[in-house]
Image (cartoon, rainbow over all chains, first blue to last red):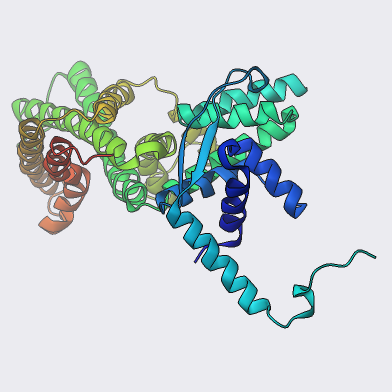
Length: 107
Length: 278
């Protein structure tokens, strides 16, 4: 079973697709959760996910805005998609019938 | 301040792997992080990486087996070497005679030569094994080992009351000053331990070399134990029976503790041959 932060990373990587790399994933998580995502937590969790075979990463291109430094490009694997689906399913099942599981209404 | 913090972040990022350093510094630059943020982020990642290294058993083994056990025992033998050489030189220089206990100058020379060779061998082997076991925690275990070898025997002697300093209130200053590598015995230790660590880092040690070093260490250890017995007999004679050496296993224990990494050498070299070393 995934941890909450692992699920956030997999979801962000899946949403970003070909553009999934360290800084973009971090930004995506911060925007979605409203919480700070530390580089340390991000990179150690990416390693863990890669060791579990849930993602694959490679060295991407460098850009001037990165000071000529390379990106860590991330791609979610089939096993990663399965793990994310399992986690999401569990969250949905455990939340069934609860008031906070209803769609948020803007007031 | 901002540029200084960035400069510092880039410098401490050198503790990360090359690829990871590129990724992390690139991400921070792209997200226009402030110097303080960059420094905090890089330091946080380094701390996490370092803590993760301690999930392995080997750094703990290095810390207890080499830093604590070998460190203390080596400290004791280095103190004995430094004191022994100094006393012999002074006695011969001042009196030109030898005390009448049955220990001859030839035996003295033999004992000091064996002790010197044993210290060189133990230092090299300890440096090698410490590096192989510590891996990337070496930056922490190596200074601790150095402090242990320089200071632990003196600290134990003072705290146990068997040695009284002329200025007891300056114990910490005395211990700190002893860390400055000025004495010949210290330089001997640093040179050979650093050489061993350097070889350990490159991982190059053939099985035959490992076995040879282990064998040499055993021969020196046995010779040292044997020549130590002359001094115990001499002390018994000189004190007219007041001094009584402890049981053999008590005399043997420090020698066994200081030389155990030698037994580990063939195992390590066989692993590096099989390409399984990390």
